[in-house]
Image 1 (tube, one colour):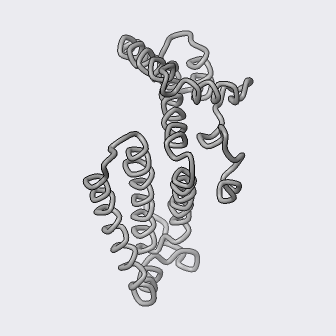
Image 2 (cartoon, one colour):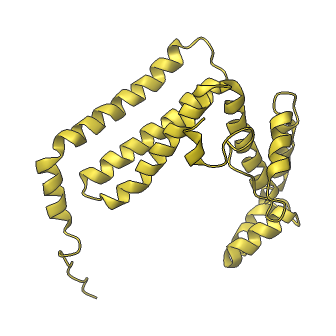
Length: 214
């Protein structure tokens, strides 16, 4: 079958790329320089900081790295003329800025712990989806519908490893370092769906819009 000829009145990739090169090449070059600077900044901060603790790991190793990756995605998409597609990583970049700014503003160590506990709870839920007959698995299989059989075959193979992961996550969440935050997430989760609130909700704003006010 012959492919359809493109309707260039709707999308002309070549023309768009040429316009980017002609009018916005300096901006593209600047974005690339910032991405390169960001990668070096992460490593420089890691090697010079005195405290290589959880807070540094969250801010540098996860959030700042994510911000650099999102900016890199913006540069790649825009340089190829995919302007509308660049909106998604640009939104991700903005949200990451909000998260970093909110963590560093005050109560930095506790807020970084909140992010980590939220992550551990997500990992624990995924692990429990691998336990035959668990409520988490039933809900997951219901959601994936036709693909449930594919996942169920994997569950039987990884059962022992899954149980070890669950025990490890629960041990961390119930430790003295994280128990209070974990309990707060447990109180705030949706009782019908079992879904957690977003990581910044305990002792924090109700939404991203409110984050900039705190």
